[in-house]
Amino acid sequence: MSEARLDELLERYIDGRLTAEDKTVLEARLMESPEARQRFWARMNFEGLMEEAAELRGAHEWMAARPAEPAVEPRSRWAALLSWPWAGGLAAAAAAVAIIGLVLRGPDPAAARAEATTNGVALLSATWDARWKEPQGALAAGAILPPGRIAITAGVIGIEFFNGAHMTVEGPAEIELTRVDEAICHAGKIRVEVTGVTRTFRVLTSRLEVIDLGTEFALEVGGDAGTEVHVFNGKVSWAERGKPAAAAREELLAGQGIRLNPQGVARISARADDFVSATELDQRLQVQQTERQRVWATEAQRLRDDPRLVMYFDFERDPATPRILRNRANLTAAALDGVVVGCEWSESRWPGKGALGFRQPSDRVRVSVPGEFDALTYVAWLRLDRTEQVFTSIFLTDGFEPGEPHWQFYEGKVRLGIGDNAVRKPTVYLRPGVWLGPSGANYTTGPFAVGAGPARWRHLAVVMDTVKREVVHYLDGHATFRTEMVVPQKLRIGDAELGNWGLPASTDPLPVRNFNGSMDEFMIFKAPLSAEEILELYEKSRPDGGKPAAVAAK
Image (cartoon, rainbow, N blue to C red; front, side, top):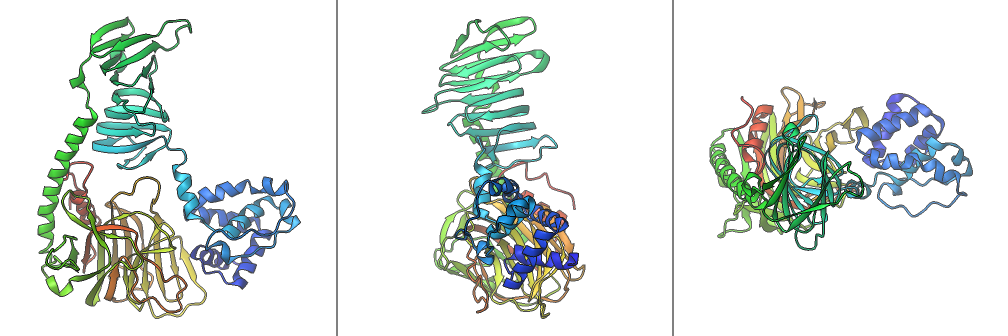
């Protein structure tokens, strides 16, 4: 079997379109060829499915210890694609068992999402002008934090531990999360609040152990300057690490503190004003968000006059016509208003601003965009709460005719499909993330995290440029996937829907594609926005993070 044929079968497996004949051929090839199995693992790694694949690498041990059993009831849509009669000979083929097990079970997005949260010990609740130390990379508010180190060079972050304790960290600082009730401060300033049902919280440094006994305290690790402990409410128990076990622990009460340096331990007075509290962090965030919202309101007003802007929904509810979604692009205005079907008005990423919630299979916004285009750019601010089906719509044309784009989530990834009039059977796999299906070309970027923590607002964009023959996906201002457009043609939208699929083909096996979440901004430009423009849109419209003026130069 050629590599091209194997890639084609693997793509069909990932796409959920293996025929019975394909299944037999693929299973036989995986059983007989170590090279084919290696290629399978490589593709699973690319598709973001290695969490489940890794779990199955040890399946040979389980199989070798058990007698043959009948196949179990398939647990997902993927499992229904295959039916493998387990044979005693499989126990001897360890690697093949693992792979065929994955083919039998299929990717299980729900299992992968659950896996992502099992080792978390805390939640990143807030970031204020945080600058993250490389190579760690930036973290966003709402992220689940597993055990491990976190380092910032500037700014302030808030961390909520799963036992209820709250910690503010001021940069430059480096801390290490170890358990839900313990952390290590390697450098910098932290402030810990332990209230309510939280009983204790333990903080370690290289020289100290501090146990919070239901109180509020702060700690600063300053290298040669020594380590300081400040108690603001209640009391803490502390001891020097490395001392004999019999050494007595000491307590500090509210208003008291200590400084530990090479010369010894000195008593000091607690200085609450030297450390950012949770309340002060909230106040800073409110001021920052108000300023950022003002900046974005000014920018949004400017964008309305952009001659490239075809459609702009800001999702502000019009009380006089609540079922009409007003198009704010001055070029087209009311001619391209949307019609709201179902849905509910909900909270936005900005205080006091409107958003539209999509919860039911019937929820959608109907639009119609006439004309043909050499390029299109879609931009959206959305919050994806959950995915319950293989495809989840962002913006889909009613059909999938030549030149019509489909922008949607596919098994936790972001996919752009563009219809064409070629007839292909079977699917042609071109390169990672790009393949030609029976009725169009598909361009799929990497996994989009869903369920790894509280849902949060994300900025998505996709650029379709038929002149440069290029497709580019963006997430939060940065390109995540850039590739050649394999079938350049005029682009057209016509009748379409936000958050659903209006007229799926009667033969399509996956017609239910409703969005589950909220949207509070959507734009269509009839031009290919540059990477600098996409980043500027994101930086000026994001409700959290750095100063809005800090954008890339054009």
